[in-house]
Length: 301
Length: 260
Ligand SMILES: Nc1ncnc2c1ncn2[C@@H]1O[C@H](COP(=O)(O)OP(=O)(O)OP(=O)(O)O)[C@@H](O)[C@H]1O
Ligand SMILES: [Mg+2]
Image (cartoon, rainbow over all chains, first blue to last red; front, top):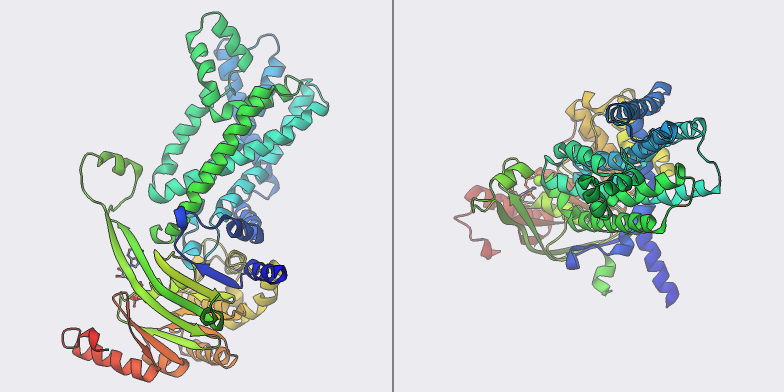
């Protein structure tokens, strides 16, 4: 009996038997969905490879540009915040630069996944019209591309880490769960916005504003410590910012990364909890939204 | 599992498909917000398939005919799993390869080779399987020189040659073809119909939509006639074609569809 059942399951795994029915509660059966997603993962990697090739990201200069661009950006923000803005931390400019750079890189990894993912479905038009496959493959592929683009910046960051004399040790291993959370959040946001983009074709054009404002509200250009200090001195804006920060999904992840990389310690539990809670919530919500809607995509494109 | 569905390669039971048409010309967030105040309905529901049931036994070729807008392409896309039925159940036993009206391809900026690979991977083939079939595909389509060029540089005939070559060379158990036999020039048409005959002789299951009634007569073991989302009649191709042709000549008014 159990053997018979496993052979049916295997048939399905090989794509040999398909049943199409209206979805109960709007969702496809989850186990077969993720099994298919896993089975066709090569597609996501190949799509990523092809699009990076098309964008010349796989050449030496393409790689260099991936690094130069965010470095210039962090240079600009450093000048803006530290020199023009009256000095964020006169005490240790090196540490502040390291914090700013690492924060920007991580922030742009997450929002880069989001903005590339937003057009993933609408650009997959023909394929969606002709083939039945889990649409999340398209967003997984763009998040994988974003990760490949993020890696070289991580290496550059470690150069800065060493030059500015930040601590090296086992506490840096905390970076792994932080990156996992960032990836979960990036994929969740990509699923969410890719679905919205199918229904509202101007979603992608709102994103640059969202990304900009969200950056200012997140602890990238300012540090949690600095905000606390200024709030203590009666800075009302900083007080507000700190009170509402836990509902900013980026707060936990970026704060935790700052503590690990520049604080030189393991991250505080509340930041980890916020980071994990938000990235899990966004991943689940974004994915459920996409899965409940994806069979409509073929008609909407 | 019932014995009926076990014997059939494709079993379609009481399938309904609805299109929800958005009447907004430009579905944007801005437009949606701007027109919030106006109580205008912008969504219309259209029943493109209305309780269609049939099954295709293993190794048989089923033809589908019907006027424009009858729901043939909708049926093909639903059986291929691209559209979801709003009611009913479809069971497909075997590996499916589809050749739908829109052809292969995914991104016309990518080369034919990249499109074939990505399309195959998305359809669930392994990299090794695609590699194995690749030479066969480009040779069959006779466009080897163009395989590494972006697909936007292809003529429409080259496009459909490649689409046909991919669909038939993937070794499917079940082939779903929607009006794609007219692909290419006379030479390629001959080649395509030979290939189809070969697949028929290899006892592959097929679901074929064509306005070329001759093709249906030649290839199919059985045929169904769809009209306005309903299955009007099912039977021997000759008989169905005769009824359909008569209907086309006399028109809907003279013949009540209930006669059948
Ligand atoms: N994406 C869509 N959105 C809304 N309605 C659609 C959509 N696609 C098709 N329809 C409608 O569904 C009906 C059936 O269309 P379908 O494409 O299945 O017809 P068909 O039998 O393939 O016709 P043809 O012979 O012209 O190819 C038509 O009335 C059409 O207007
Ligand atoms: Mg059609």
